[in-house]
Length: 248
Image (cartoon, rainbow, N blue to C red; front, side, top):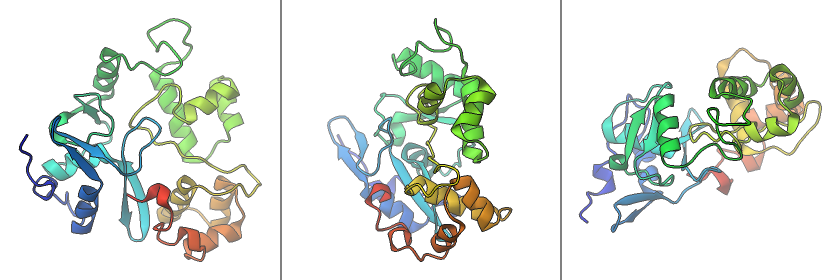
């Protein structure tokens, strides 16, 4: 199978969203299967097996799904938040633009169900023994990502068992390939930071509406830790290049 050079496929910057360095780095994370034509992502994968590509803007990491990035760099069209990137071949690590298509949330769910990938651990909202809907699940995850709720408060707000809430937040049940879980430390504690928390710290700081104290309360760490991270004083998190988990 003849396949053009990757550098001739992923060429668009999309209003400077992707630099030349980003595009080269993206291509370096692809292994071509010349029998199937799949572009297998060999970088970081999420729990669903989908590739994660991390952009760096103003020194801050921005994680995104690799197959969404593939469509944008191959077409020059920025994908709006209401559209989903779906796989024609049901192969999550594949980022070949020819194997992808854009659709609405309904299209994505229909495609998933047609391929037999119903919600993990449940029948699905149209099946039996399911108390929730996708609209409810999306609201739960939006509230969680806001950083304004503890797991317990969220469970009480939506009347969901705390164990079920944990699985929803971690994308184990009601699996959605376009949702990237974020873990927050316990309130008032100094839980060991994970990359998702560091990304969230920088995101909240970039918004400009939160003090270091407020960010510390949302993440669940000391205010001094927030200052050290934002000022690149913690070696582990300087430019995030020393953490192999997000090397993309």
